[in-house]
Image (cartoon, rainbow, N blue to C red; front, side, top):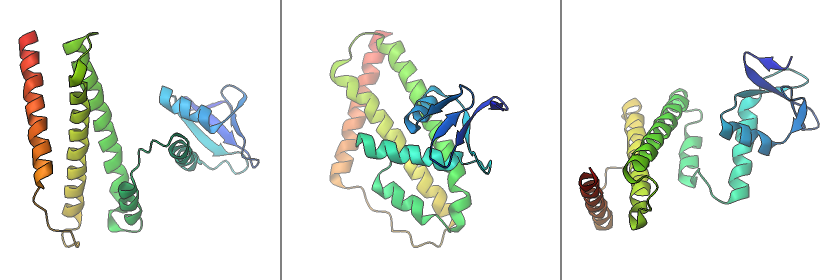
Length: 192
């Protein structure tokens, strides 16, 4: 059986080898990572038992990517928070929330790229190249705040630290970001 409902089936054997039944070739975790990046859907099955082990293999790919590149996508604070939800009443909510957050981030990223291409085309944008990254950082900050608010809604009596007033440096950074956004908006207005 090469495919299952349009998905490629990867068989994992006891010797840890992975076999792509769609192409009849052995593959590596790096090959599977490339397939994920290309948007190819696949499931991984234990060759002996037939159990679906896709989750553990994808987790293994993340682990290897994190250790290979040195560019970690999962900060330690995030990992600690994630671990703390295991066995907690919130455990059921977290996967759905993370899935929706990643989809929203992907949608926002696509919209931002389209807007930048419409606005600047192929012209270099010089030092304003930092502005799109700051917008991404702002989106991440907002998503993190939404996640924290959602967690507070489901456990209102949890020992949450009282909200701190923003530090002066953070307020200054926010003011600088606002000024850069105003400058970018002015440039956009002048272009149209």
